[in-house]
Structure formats: C-alpha cells, structure tokens
Length: 287
Image 1 (spheres, helix red, strand yellow):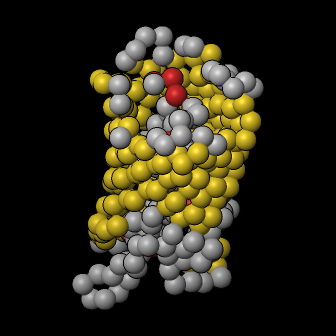
Image 2 (image 1 turned 180 degrees about the horizontal axis):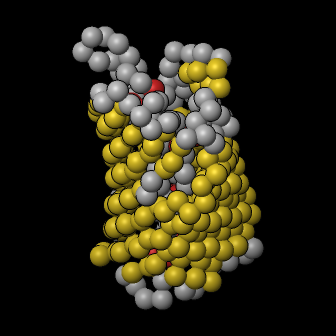
C-alpha cells in the first residue's frame, strides 16, 4: 500500500500561497479500486513575512488542520472533499497583533484516470484533476467590528476553480508522481483579489521494505500579483520552489502516518515577501 500513496500539503487560504498537489493527501497517486472510501486528518504549520520591516511588515504564523474524505464510485474517477480549520497569528508593523481561528474554505475535487499502459499492474498512469475551493469561511472581524487584515482571515472569500494533469510511474521499489495544476481566483473579501497560481509537483518514493517509505519531492509555484481596490500589491506574486523530504509509516494495512517538511530553496518572489519552512503531519485510513 505504501507504493501507491504520496501525502502532500493541503491547500493554503489563498491561491498564491498554494504549494503542492492537495489531492495527493487523501487520494494517493496509484489507481484505487472501485468503492474505496478513505479518510484523512492533516496538520500543517507555516510562516510568511510580507512587507518592508518596520514600515509595512507583516509576520504570519498559520496552523491548519484539514479533515479529508475520498470516494471512488468508479475505477476511473475519485471524488474528494477537504474541510480545514485554520488558526492564524499576524504581527503588524505597529506592534499590534491579529488572531483568528475558524473554519476555512472548503474544497471539492475530482481525479480522473485517462490512460494506463496495461490493465494489470500498470507502470504508467495518466489523468486529469479538477477542483473548486468554495468561499465557506466568513469575513472575520475584531471586537470593534472592523474586518481583520486579509492575511489574518481563515479564508479569502473567493471562488477558486482549478484544473490540471497528473502522471504516475511505478517500478518496485520506486515510484514517481508529477502534476501541474492551475488555480484561478474569482472575487474575494471586499475589493481584494488574490492572484492566480500555477503549481507543479514532482515526488519520488522509495519503499524497499514495508512498512516504511521514503520520499523526496520538489514543488514549485508561479503566481500573479494580488490586487486590492484596483491597486497591484508589489509584495505578492512571483516564483518559489520547495525541496520536500518526507517519510510514510504503515503500522497496519489500512493506516498510514506521514511527516513531511517543505524547505524553500528557490526564492524569486516579488517585492518584500519570504516564506519559511512548512511542517506537515498526517493520518490516512481506509474505511
């Protein structure tokens, strides 16, 4: 079972901080059997620094716990649902701080299997993936009724459809997964609209002996800049690449435990904008 699962980071609050293929967490990358039902719980911690220090700076810490479920009604399609609970702490340049803890934006997605090289034990799989992030999180306010900063919100108030392609290769004890997905933001809280993003994932897995598998990946994101009330945010958009080592452990046949670290190694983000190391831990169970 370890040879058919990658655990990837779940989606962030906005399309421009998306990194990794969110369908991997709950769906894996192999071809599932018809009728399979799978549940997952994933925790993610990340940091982000935005703006000019001491002038317009924001220091963000985010804690995200996502409950996911995936169902395969037919061998050629898997449907998924992800429900996040998001906690944020945003330190501002004026020494004030904003905090939030609420339901984030729910995401639904589907993965289709288009082609495989052979019916039994395929080595090559090719498919499509599509999703929709729904603006289920309300716009949060402080005690005075003033809306929190956009970066402190649990969601972004936008409809975010996504679509892309994926490919899987299997040759025991090695497997490989590639995907390329576009995220297109429509709307947002107030007059704010996050930029669109194109996210690519390359993940290799080596599992010579059960119950442990080692993973090494490279995730990239290229994003357009955010726009607030018609004004382009200079500290948004650009390109970033993450080196992503991880480990998966299967104590029983239907249970998977995973830990992963995303380390930024290529930083070509626009303006004053830095993202730190992200840490992820997850549990996946076949029902």
